Image (cartoon, rainbow, N blue to C red; front, top):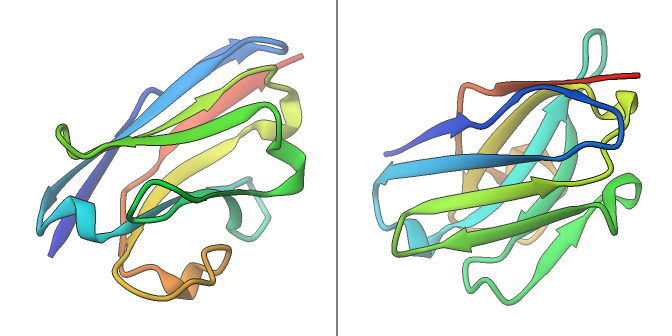
Length: 124
């Protein structure tokens, strides 16, 4: 089992920044690819970013490229999502997830464990 706990969400004005953290406990964190997803009210959960277990490969959905950065610190068992130039369309609950295998990082079905989510609200 892997337990994931997100933090760092909040209310920010358009153009602002937030850094989300996801602390992992349980099995060896470094063995897992990590992803961030988000879900806005009335919408399906969508892929935001992912990082391979090596940390060498990153993946982003087009709408966040150049604005968001995913990173991991295996010594701290933590994955981060730095979000810059936020806009109201980024408002959602953000979830981190861990995948032991698979390479379709944009699919929710690839992931084995999920956090409880953290709310991000961007005001215009």
